[in-house]
Amino acid sequence: TGHRKNLPDVRTFTREEAQDTLKRLNVWRKKFLQERGTRFVFPSDEIYLLAGEPLPVYGDGKQMRDYAHVYDHCTGIETVLLRGNIGEVYNVGTGREMTNLEMVDIVLDTLGKSHDLVKHVTDRPGHDARYAIDAGKIARELGWRPAESFGSGLLRTVRWYLDNEAWWRPMKA
Image (tube, rainbow, N blue to C red; front, side, top):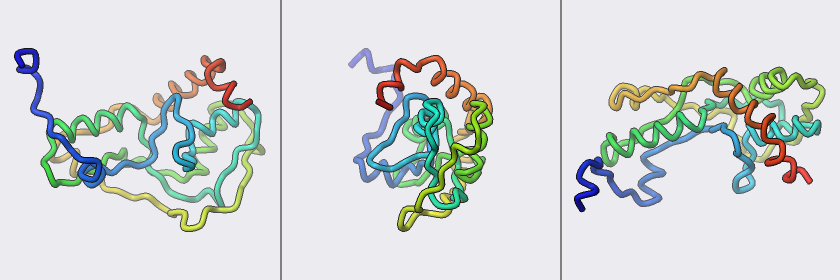
């Protein structure tokens, strides 16, 4: 065990304990597609836009979300695992809320695409109007704050998709 002596004491969590301990919202990153039938606004939708296809937006698109870059989400989880207290709940979020439609507009503008590509579709039954959290506790008690600015994270993600069409194009076939 000598090779482990400099590693922090990492607690083991069951799936249920981890779900109770960590709350996550919408995470956007490169290489993120549809998961378990749930559509996230970004960046799987970026593939629709890069392919020139209409972008489906549920209902009026006014559902409020707190978007976090995957780097920030992962460092938040790491912070909780290394410094959090068992049984406590830590919300990982940025405090930067916007509607799904606002996010779509920003992505369209960043890609230089027409807003005519937005296609409103029937809203899902029971679709949450807002995911609201207070991430103040993780900042106060554990010192964690998001490191990635919204603008820089978005631009890096868009640039990745533009530079890696060979990766995403086959998924549209």
